[in-house]
Length: 326
Image 1: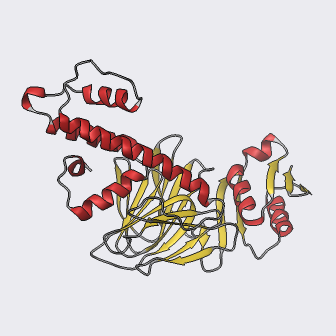
Image 2 (image 1 turned 30 degrees about the horizontal axis):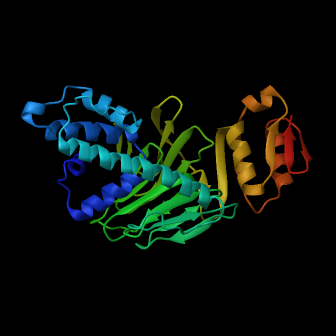
Image 3 (image 1 turned 90 degrees about the vertical axis):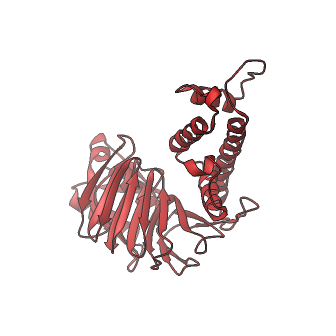
């Protein structure tokens, strides 16, 4: 990123970085790189004090008219600011595309170059896609993915915008496979893993089922995660923990979900995703419980609710497409 702002990237590197910037993610990291590049590129007689670039950048993006004022900013830095504003606008366009994709548009050209492909799934059973590099992805219900036309040629970068997906990655020692999901970046050469990153949930989770995986969350790095190892990132508390598991949350072979100790909020989201029923807590105690269950789209909604009620000593009532648990 720093080399890009200093205009030192090769053409193929520029394409990857510009796609990353267009997504409008990791704004703080991009700002830091911008400030560092601006300082290095300013002239000796025009050295910028610490924090001043950030101040001027904030003025610029907030569209405040500072004409007539004197600012120690070189022509190159102004050029960098202009470029940065373009990518903030692109980030807004990318957000709009996510909304459009929710209405069933799976392929959309977001920019003239490169072209993005957006793939989404609706309810269960899961949706399977094969990427240009022969990587197989099984998407759980209500999932949205995005990658560009250079995927498998210049890079293997993909974004999990929303949902849950199982990645069976084709090995390629020349091009690392990178998945971006909110604040988590996962990098592999060839392996299999599951990422859970629903916007309705306050966490992002990865579970490794084969091979080795490297995970980066902000400045925290987890290297060489192997089968049975997972990383749980709590967004509200901004911390991550390592854990082990015996059974992954989503089995792409059987199309089943295995939920262990999940909140009522997640249980409700999963049931609505799979069956289309809205789950409502009839009492505060129900809302505060944690639930362990297995969900299969082959079973009926009443079979699932009977099992949950039996395990947790409760009852339920179905009214239309709403389920009240008490």
